[in-house]
Length: 430
Image (cartoon, rainbow, N blue to C red):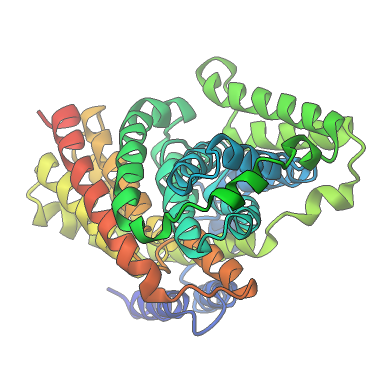
């Protein structure tokens, strides 16, 4: 490798370490790393901003932006508070039933929106319900974080790593539904059963508290019925457009932006209110990350790593898929799965091409998606949703420690990835 390539690798590893250890804010680390890449000429403005293969993936950025605006408007309707109270009443105050319903709601919402947004909206309401039922809130928050990562794996928009994988691999919304959703439905059911065992000490039933929760009227949580109808209509149209991509030929990013534009234009929500919930730091973080990874592509580092990986597995597709599945699960447990997938996606793209690039080789993309999405559950820093949950818990005076989360996450990750192994093997490799 050239001197520039070695410096680029050193800068990338330094930034990655800062992101993983959270010694520096991840946005500052990503932007700092991107700045170094540009300063040493590992990449340039043309490659960083306009290259399809080594630049910022604007499809990812604008898909997230559009969905954040839609969710920001939807949040104002109070529909998530409605769902939480509805779940508590349908569970009749029974703790395990309540957890099961919250898991299903969280998993489904994460599939339609994204896991970070979902936990931001569901978690605060969980405090209210647990307080009324005199239940420890930590088990419910942990279960919601884990459910959001599992449920988000089922669709293109459910988990940020999936957006990156779809963009790099040329995969559609329907591809994720066909290949990922069947597995995730089974894993959610298994996860609910695991929670019965993992959190058994938290399921203490209080009849008096349960009677009080039954007096709440969930309809009072809806703050704006007209806006709710408008928001749901747009969300349904956006989801339909995702599914109809083979017919309409609109990229997911275009669909999300069109949906956000229609929602803002057709409702009484002001522009300022619409963009208030946009997580600008997340979008900037993605941009910096793409520039860093793109620099590794430009300097030939990614090509060398992919060639070494192909040689190590001897070009055997089955071995490559299994190594990618379990390796991604382990590595995503140590570092956030977003930068991990951003780094690995160009390597997997090279491996897919080396395997012939046919439909059978696509199993490598699914192995990466499953390993990264489910591996993010293993530790408190493995996925963005986990970090958000810990932050919310700390702000509300009930901190969840790293190991309190991780001791449950490791069990769930091992079981779900173990179940995913025969799924990949039987469906794609036999």
